[in-house]
Length: 71
Image (cartoon, rainbow, N blue to C red; front, top):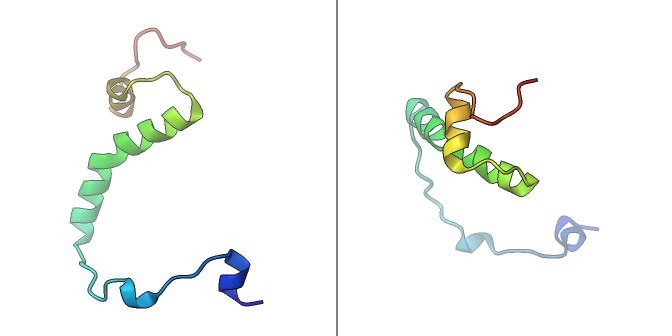
């Protein structure tokens, strides 16, 4: 059994771009840190957490959010 029949779909590699842009590690890590709060907030929404986006940013900055229980 080949990979595509096992997956149940296939694609044409001719439609994918040949030239992929590259960036420095410094730029990539900067963008990651800039987007980290969005990634965490998205995951928390999927898990059903009641935290708002500003609360997630505050937590990632190391400040306790008011009303949260301390463990």
